[in-house]
Image (cartoon, rainbow, N blue to C red; front, side):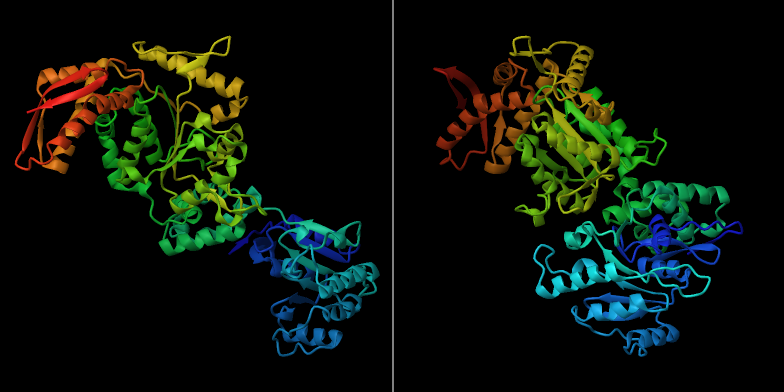
Length: 617
């Protein structure tokens, strides 16, 4: 993990550079942030990836420091580096026996007594309080021993003096370095108005740092030795872009994963995806999926009738997802969801059914999709259900429904039904998902949506409010599809731009709005015929009876069920249940004692006194 350069110009991490600059004027430092990460440390004309403690040692050794006294509440005290010379020097200065090289247990109230001779010794040395976040059991309620310890350390900060170790040397403190996850893990009064204790925040690695690390780690990929300079440069750029927001330790773990899978440089995206979502298998690259998509339009059309433009656009987006071209028009490597679809149109025209058909096509089971009824999230605080409650609130440990579901099934179709009924604050949460393909839950854990297809359904644009605030239809059955599509798209744009005041959400959805048409009479007849066939099939399965429906009866039922198409296929089903299924069940109930019958014929359907009935033979 080295990178040699004859024109090497060493650049230290920013927080270490600040430490170098302040060693002469500050006796104590609180280091917070990703303190368990790896860092790019210049060493012997090359960069190496080192953990925090080793990086600190290399930084302090430059100034003549001879050892670190490292303490944590579990192991006690030890000397770093663990060499005989360092142990012997520490034993002499601290009047303790470190020569065996094993950690020495020590209580918290005795520790300041060892720190005092360290910070005043005429030898360059430093103390590192590792896992300092775990020193107080509760930062709001310190025990007596903890309070005395922090008070003693505060006094040490005010009484320390820089040490001059050579006639021509620069006076530097023997510092105490606190390694914390967060600065507020220590008592606030300890740092409040205390210039002797300096706070250093370690930032997440920037792009250039990730790119340098990628160059160091490239050797773990199978074909690194055969790659050209351009290929290695392209790999480093891609690796750095794909790992935005990740630590250098995560980059190291990704390359270890790539090494075990013998992945080439070109498959770095697969290695990153595998690390993020925790799955080795990638269904998006399976050969069977491409075979299914070849006939996807025909297969889906058998389930979703009369929506050819919507089906074609949906299949196009699916093909784009399988080919890995989502976000390909952007300069950066995309981590957006595999696909985003916004299904808009009248009720009952097949929006949810298309989502089910898409799920069955990809995963072989239409029940594999994750569905959220967004009318359940109309309250402002309902975002806690999706993402999880924030710390300190009831249910904090349970996580969110959305984040838990995606963490469990990263390869999925996620359906957000009737999205316009959700509270606008919840809609804001989708900005990060649509742009970055990730979301942070209430526990602070990041969930990745980069392998999911997101589908939003909506009835926006079908009706609008007039100048008096009354609802009126914006589109009517029988209008040309082009006109329906134009009106619905315009109404959706107006809703996000002017009603919600959130045009950025619409911008993230882009041109992925798929408008469904009203059910036309010819399509309504096909839907009706399919539903009637389902009834006959259920009769055969449940009662071993063959149901015969003569054409005149079928035509009468068709007229009743399709006289009003504004409610779409769902309305046809509801009418069929009222006009035929319910009276059929009533008639069958009275024939239940006839076990010899194997076939029944519906000779007539009637409507009398607002009651539907059937006659059987």
